[in-house]
Length: 348
Ligand code: HEM
Image 1 (cartoon, helix red, strand yellow):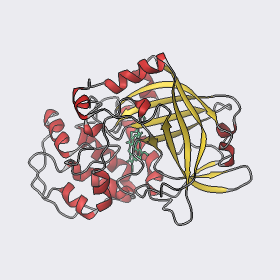
Image 2 (spheres, helix red, strand yellow; image 1 turned 30 degrees about the vertical axis):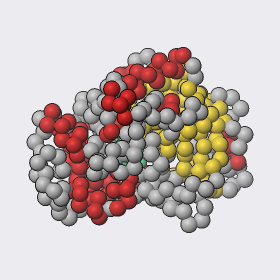
Image 3 (cartoon, helix red, strand yellow; image 1 turned 120 degrees about the vertical axis):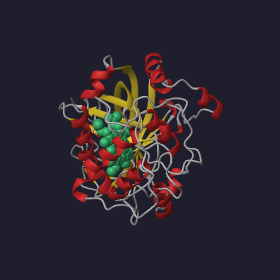
């Protein structure tokens, strides 16, 4: 992410400059709001308020498309558990001796349908994974290519989204975004973390960000966060290459790549220790925390009818299975409701 971007939430909002251009193009009139105390957020209406704010930022809603992570591509493959996985969780796919089918959707954030893949606002990217268990039940992981979130509370996320929506062209400095960042230094630091355009989705690491409670067969429960590490290594485009990249280079490349040779990631979990912030995805845990390998994700096929399948599927970070339970992280707990609001909006 370039340092001149004042703020940008990972899963949703483009920078003020990009939003400006996009909304002007979409013919949306821009509010010139002076920085002021943010309006209170009705806690009971957070899912609706979040989707409304996401719609505003992207000039949406856009028919049939997600309010966030609208642009995506789906591929298929399988997961094979590592021997160490069952020490963390008794979840059936972590103890399975046979490959577990996976259905993966890579995405660009925001509700903007045609956001260029190398645009600074297209990062962090998304990776959503559906595992089909031997019982035919499913469980999901929904991750982004950033190891933390800009804020820890759903109310703050709605305020950030609203601030971005109110800080477009013509907004006088200090804008609502400037004010938000001044009041939330962790979000400002997050927004200024460089996130260069990746060479490929196959060379990008993804993170679950929110913690889950993992319980093994002996009844031992520990908090952990998913990490999805590309076996091809992490590689980004140089700035000039990013500027010249085709608008859909990531979406097109991964479909070609999986048809040529399998794309692999190591799925692992970082375990919390006493005192770690297990209910706040804006706080990264120390890098020295123990990481346990859960297994290997191999992607080697594509989905034929991309439009229909992307429209049909609703990934849900709380679609879990025995051995994995939610933490009390309020952002994690509100996500399924917000995703459902978006799903209802895009289902027709
Ligand atoms: C309060 C916080 C959040 C809100 C309100 C929110 C909102 C949304 C919405 C409305 C969608 C579209 C859902 C659909 O139509 O299927 C979405 C998708 C997505 N979100 Fe979030 N999100 C939040 C936090 C997060 C976090 C913490 C992560 C990652 C760790 C994340 C990763 C993703 C990804 C990867 C997708 C695309 C899923 C797909 O491919 O279908 N989100 N989010």
